[in-house]
Length: 290
Image 1 (cartoon, helix red, strand yellow):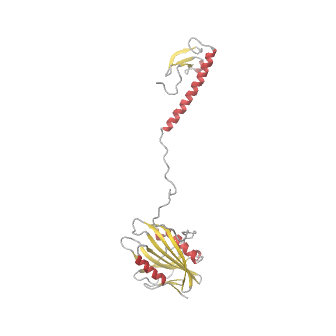
Image 2 (image 1 turned 90 degrees about the vertical axis):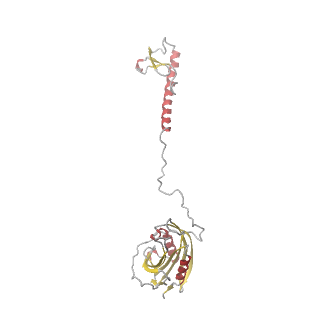
């Protein structure tokens, strides 16, 4: 069988010496030994025959060009296929959040502050004594350890905390209640300041060992000893293969007195209703010095 794209048998310009004007016979598979003196075929031919032969030559050249193009394309088709680039810079979908539910209001987003370096220090408070930050005072939670310095709260200037460990099912995880003052540059209204703190929490050092996200939150205007304040209650969904918890219950209270903004922050696993009750009592016992 002839090679696909080969010209039919006949006389063609001698490929060994095209300038001589001689013709050499092609049998459909190979060039023969016999040549002619340029008359088209042995024994000569008419001018019309030469014109037809010229047309054949043009057709043969076209067929050969087409054959070359076909071979190149087929060769590419048999090559190694392109490898999909899976090294994308961003995730292809939204992570599943098992704790998400409709929120009373849209989740806050950080405005760009989220300050983490304290600019002030204060003396270590006495053990098992109420903690005071600015004009805000927090009572001692019964049975909790502390106080310890807490410098990880976003936008805080000072901070002290009482805490309780959560056992072997939540290693290196604690429930915590913190009181402190806020960086002046992070303070606007008490509501905006509290929401900014909440927005910064999931990406803060406090939650660096897990994947945290704001599932829902609610903002309430309150007063402490007659001083206006803002309370934000929120649920942070928690994803971790090491902790037996699905969410952290957050309460943030911000109050501003005499040019200083103070905060209270509690963070307790949603499953620990006993500790949530302690945090509720502590928040209810906050006081503001006159």
